[in-house]
Amino acid sequence: MFFIILLTFYFALNLGANDVANAMGTSVGSKAITLKQALIIAGVLEFTGAILFGHQVSQTLSTQITNPSLFTPQIFVMGMISVLLAGGVWLQIATYLGLPVSSSHAIVGAIAGFSWVALGVNAVNWLSIERITIAWIVTPVISAANAVLFYSQIKYWIINQSSQITQLNEWIPWLSVAVVGIFATLVLPPLTHNVTNLLGEQLGVNIPERDISIFVGAIATFGLTIYSWKMIEQGSAGAGVLREKLFSRFQLLSACFVAFAHGSNDVGNAIAPLAAIAYVNQAHTVPMAEIVIPTWILVIGGVGIVMGLAIWGKTVISTVGDRIINLQPSSAFCAEFATATTIVLASRLGLPVSTSHTLVGAVVGIGLLQNPKSIQISTLKGIAIAWLITVPVSASLSAIIFKFMEFF
Image (cartoon, rainbow, N blue to C red; front, top):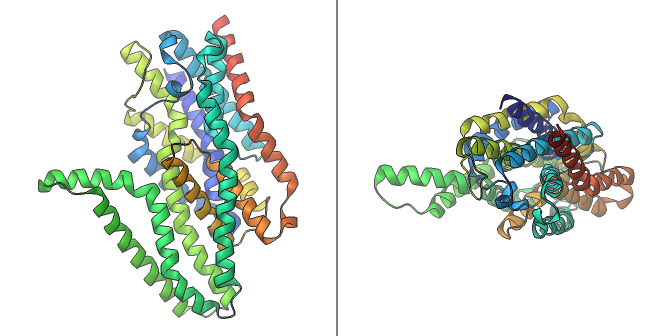
């Protein structure tokens, strides 16, 4: 079991270096925060999100990509070990090359790979694979469209206006509502659920979760608006500098929300195989649906993704933040906002999405609107190739590792 825990930690390290770096890339690239600040923000909020809400990843990926009823416990455990090793190796290779890939697709490919060689083609749930592939193609396009729409409005109503300060003062309340509304959608539901239950038990009343969410959102919006107005009022720099300084503050907030939400959701990619193996060891049967993830497994995942970002994340951060287009806080904020909007919409539709693909799509959309010639095509080609080969490479690695383990 100790070896499996080490493999999980290894997978989490590489997930942090790649997936978490995607979330921080635009903030660092626009100079809204430094790399050191990004590491601190992601370290605290990714870990907090993973520990507090990572247990909501209740259905393992193994029950979604395969038919678990076909597996014996021994084959299932061997397969999960091969998934951890294959996924971790591929993410490490992609991170070394500076390519932002999807940990979700890596683990999906790895699960499909070992299932195929273990029990044949019918062991793979091809409907789920097809659904993921469609989302893989569609979400970057939708995110790019959202980024273009939002940034075009910012340019028209604020950046291109002669009286930028006046326009900023008028738009700050609406920007605050948009930021709090979208990003709170990622964070508040699980948080208010726990708070509502606790207050309801203490007071002996039924408190609607929606009321608390609206109350918290209203306070946050009001506070952000007042703070932004005071910053403009006390500012002495030129309109353009002051504008970008304001957007850097909005982007700092968005980076915090994205890091927290990422930790609470994507940590499941790293810990689901370990949780499934722990379930098999305890119940002596393959999990068929929902499983309870122990806190110690969440801690392993949370620590791993934070350390991975700190050790190896700089390369992928540089790719997303610097090597596609040059970003300013205003354009980078729009990219993050479009990414969050797309993720929220996809989640409501039940579509599996990739933070990597969604964020890169948004950055490209901003580049197309600003100046298509400014987009570094060579970087995009490398990213596209990595996207295309993630599933087959991770599947092949997992299949090879599984057969090797089976042979010995």
